[in-house]
Amino acid sequence: MNRRRLALRLSASTIAATLLAASASAGAPASALTLGNTGSGRPALALVGPRMYIAWAGSSGTAAAKQLVVGYSTSAGLRITKVPGAERVPQGEGAALDTDGTGVYVAWPAGDNGNTLTAAYTTGSALTCRTAFTGVVSAHAPALASDPAGVRHLAWTGPDGHLNVARLDTSACAGGGAMTLTNRVVLPDTSVAAPALVYDDSGSSNLGLVLAWAAGDGAHSVQIASFTGSAVLGHRSQVTAAVGSTAAPGLSSATADLYVTFRGDNGSVFYGYSEGCIPTCFHASDLGEQAGAGVGQPADGDYHYYTYFDLTGHLVISRL
Image 1 (cartoon, rainbow, N blue to C red):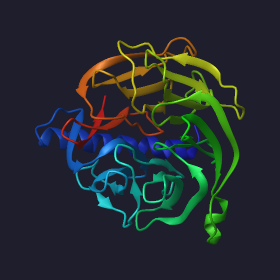
Image 2: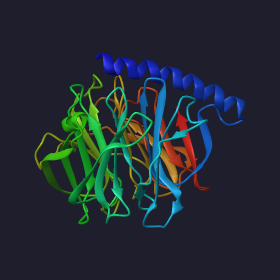
Image 3: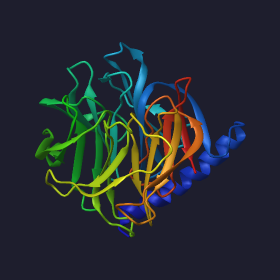
């Protein structure tokens, strides 16, 4: 196990204990914490040491340009310190987060700039290395993931519905430069919502980069496949569930498996796993919780966090 992943898992254990204690003291179910924060879309989480970073589309602003809220908490969300900024995202969308072990990279569709794909970095005090990728438009919230060597990828849904994947080169940030997108691949596959992206080194399947998306077929199926740098995806799987989804899913890679979360067409939160038998064995069950939009999960999911907005628009952080 690499040191970065070990540190994240140890910090997740601390946050998990805080979440359980806080939920119990607040009178809420031990596995869920409903916050006073409101918004829309699929929220994002990332664990960095004792901090839980959180990003979502807030409630202020216009439908086309809601406030992008980026913050962090050392109390599993009970108290969130917001990172100063005036960035905007479309209502019902949000941002992506990915950690480098010190801070987090953030990516979002700029609602005040024609949904131009934009990225930045923060350690909690401000958004730095802000880069707008001129001419690259993301119809929905993007997804971020990095491998153990720190190679970072960005996935998004283009205006035509096609999935895009590219490498996000952040090396120039240290010297005050901008990020760049390289090795961009436009996939033939299309999605009706934001994609999910994770690096799978779970020990059971070890597929590398894995995508999940809500397909536009009649069944509204949630599709999962591995990305190896070309337009041909491998290890395709369709999640087996009682209903499909037209909302953004979430993915995580844990010690021994891959996990998926999504809002079913019946409004319920679904949670499933691959049982190590990619590509044919992704099963998801209804957890009985009602979500207003997509369901998000952090990249390192050993503690099975998932986040969503409930039907009143309040942010929920849950843990199985």
